[in-house]
Length: 72
Image (cartoon, rainbow, N blue to C red; front, side):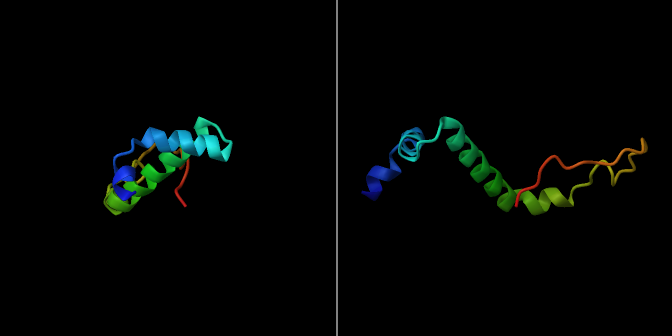
């Protein structure tokens, strides 16, 4: 069984998920995106957070930097 699952394309799992959960493809895409973002955060988040930001480099136009969203 594990060998079969390891060779099954991800889109097959997506179709099963959409069918059995009664949701649309957007739900699967959102789950996939969230998974990829969390993996990226785990792998490179600390290094990226140490990089300078526009605010730290002395942005002088007086506007506050905004975070569009934050991983929880």
